[in-house]
Each structure stands twice: as C-alpha cells, then as structure tokens.
Length: 558
Image 1: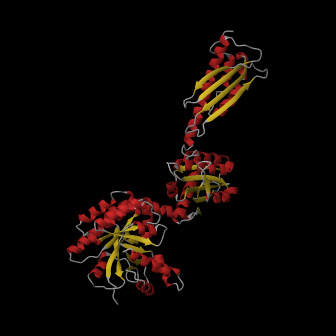
Image 2 (image 1 turned 120 degrees about the horizontal axis):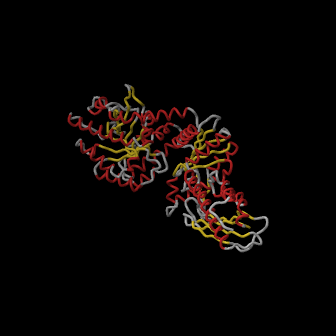
Image 3 (image 1 turned 90 degrees about the vertical axis):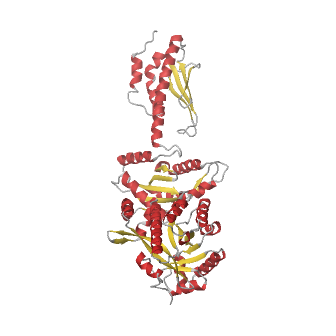
C-alpha cells in the first residue's frame, strides 16, 4: 500500500479537531473518539500516551499519566512501536502504538505510524500549552490557588449561570503575619502561603472558591450553607509545612458580604474591601458590610484628593496645647496639634489624621507641622518672647525612611532653632517591632539634643518593650488611664501609680494626657506625675492665644 500525505480517513480524523482543544484531558478524550476513523488504515490495535513532567510553577508535584487512548475490539499484538519526545518543560512523552491482532507492520506502515504519533504529540502538546497558559492567567504561582483575575472570571461565570445570591463573599488577611513570618526560617513564607491556600481550598471543596490578592490577602466565594462554619475555620487554620513539623495556627481578619440578586462583582469587591478595612481599623475579627461604610470610603477618598492642594495652600493650621508642671503649676511646654481650616470651618483631626495615616500621607503633614513650629519659634525669638519646648507628632511610618532623622535636624537648623526646644513625639507605636531601626532614630535625636517622647503609653502590648529598649525623655500616659482614676474601686489607680513610679526610676518624665478634673489632678500630684496636659488647664489654641501664656498674661497658679 502506498501512503500519501493526505487520505479520506485522515481527513475524517482531523474533523474531530476542527473545534479548538484547550486541555490535555480534552485532547485525550477527543483522540479516543477520532482514532477509530483511521485505525483500520494504520492497522492500529492499541494506542497509549505516557507523560512524565517535572515539578514546575504550574505543576507543583509534577505530572505522571499513562493512558490507553484507543483499544481495538479485535485485540492487539504484544509488541509496541514506541516514539519518544521531550516537552518544553523537559518532560518526557512516550507514545506506544500496537498493531492490530494478527498483523505485523512493514517498514512503510511503521513509518506512517511514527508520523501519526508525531502529529498526535504536536496536538497534545498544543492543548497542554494552551491549558498551561490559561492556568497561568488565572492561577497564582506562589500559592497554587486562583489569582484575582481567575476569581473574577469564576464569579462572572457563576453569575451568568445561577447568580451569586446563594453565596457570601469574603476578603481576609492573616492576623499579625509579620510576627508569624519572623518565626519561619529560611525564607519559607511562600511555602506557608501555598499550604494555607491548599488547606482552605480543601475545606471549601465544591462549595466555594478561594483566590489570593497577593501576600497574605485572600478572597473567597462561599456557599451560604457553610459560611458560619468557614468563618470559624478561618479563626484557627492549621498549616503544616512538613509531616514532621508542628502545624502553624493562623487566624484571619475577615470582611463579609451577603451577596444579593443583581449584585455585580465590581461592587462586591468594593464591599468586602471596605468590610475588611473596617475590621482592621476597629480591631475586630469579622465584620459584615453595611451600606453606611461606603460613606466613610467616599469621605476618605475626598480627603486624599484634596490633601495635596490643602497642604500647598497652607490650609493646615498649627494649634498649641499647653503642658503644665504638676508641682509648680507653671507652663513647661506644649504640644503642636494640627487643624484643617477648610472653607472657613475647622475639620476635626479624627476626620483626616487616620485617613492620612492609612495612606502614608501623614508623613508630609508631620514635616509641614515641624516646619511651621520652627518658623514660629524663630518668630518668638526675634520678638523676644521666651519659647518653651514644643513637641511635634511624628508617625511611626517615618521610620521606614532611614533619612528621617537628618531631615528633621535640617529643618530645625534651617530656622536656627535650638535643638533643646524641639521634642519629637512618636505616635501610634503600639505593635511596632523594628526596635533596631527605632533605637537608631531615637539615639540620633538624643545625641543631637532633640527630645523624644512616646505617646499613648499604656495601650498595646509593646509599650513595656519600648521602655526597656529605648532611651527617651518623656512617657505620655494614655488618656484612658487618666479617665479611670475617678472610679472608687478602679484598679487603674494602682496601675497608674506603678507606671509613674517605674517611669521615674528609669529617669524619664511622666506626662498624663486628658486631665479634665481636679480629682484627676490631685491623684496625679499625689503619685508624683511630672506634667499634665488637658482641658482642666487649656484646650489647644491658636498661636496668638498661646503667646498670652508665654508672656505671662495668663497663668495657671491658683
């Protein structure tokens, strides 16, 4: 028999592949249906494909399959004709073709079978390549679960079929993961993410879908019937890196939205973003989305949009709140506090400071305040008004910048201000862990003659660490401690007494914030607190009003 490049049977075989084949499994199934059309012409009794692919980003455990694609009902001879190929990822493919029972291939027939096997290899390779490319588009290589694109595609397909109203959408991140990461040696954090994703994917099964947004941030669609169980599970997910190691228990902070009929995926993603942000800001484990949360998001966006122009136009005004020595009842310093004068009205700090803190823009505002303070002290000096030490708030976000200390010094020197008149007050320090970096900053300030104070002491688990690790000037006691001293049976009194005693023994000064009543002042005086700050003496005030305290027109004695 003389073989040609083309035959009617071969054409019939290829007709089965006129529609694109996009997965290796689909290709194998299509071959099983198509090969009978050409089996008689090739005298095929059996046709097998064996794939052995190595571990890769797409295949975390590698691939080994050995499939009998076609078996002739008339049987086959035991001896096979094998064709060996190598894939682009250095895998091995062996195609075994067996002649039909009672037939022996001649040289020409064997050559035809080899060419057919080569064509099959190309067809399967193309399908596998398409599948891998498609997988890489929708799968995150580091975790092995869906990426955001894959998640949105899945959600849109589900929406088109049945809608999402029978599902809850969740966004979650691992709580305190930076602390967890420090316990994990040898750069094994990606292994933790991969194992975490697999454990959750296994839990959800066919009742949900998990995807990663990068790092320790994940989203999921979860059937209503298991959402409560799933939320409990996220509270303590056991992640084992090896069979011999104790599993790491990871808990998550979660934002949840109960999907409604007609919701679109874009809005859903916004809702769970808002919910998880609220959970983080309010230190809650689980927060369900509420419509009023969107108002806050719109407010935050408006703040960030108007902030650059407001800073350039000097809409931010520095107010000064006096600090008073407890024993002498004299002005001994002040804190510079910023106010936003927008359209003739004062915007309360809590409406913009947390927003700027969250977005990192607070650093620009802190330097603006420092420059304004230095300019003011320079003005007082020129007018022969004796200044007091002014504390300026600096967010812990500045500590990411190794040059922050030099910039502070440069601004102070620009106005010729004595370093002893400036105190840098470190704010929002609860949970800060990089004590090496923090210590270097504090030491640079201290050696330059610039004071350092820690704000809100008594909140957060890291406060005691800061006292032992850092050499500061002033420890500011959180107003929550001051408020509790009026309770007759308050344990806070004992706590406050011991904190002040400890602060003094460490050669620091103690300043109590939020002092509003004579009873609070008496208690603080009796336990030896050095300074107080609060409405009992004065509220934050403009520069012109504060100057009356500097010049002695208004005093605090009596």
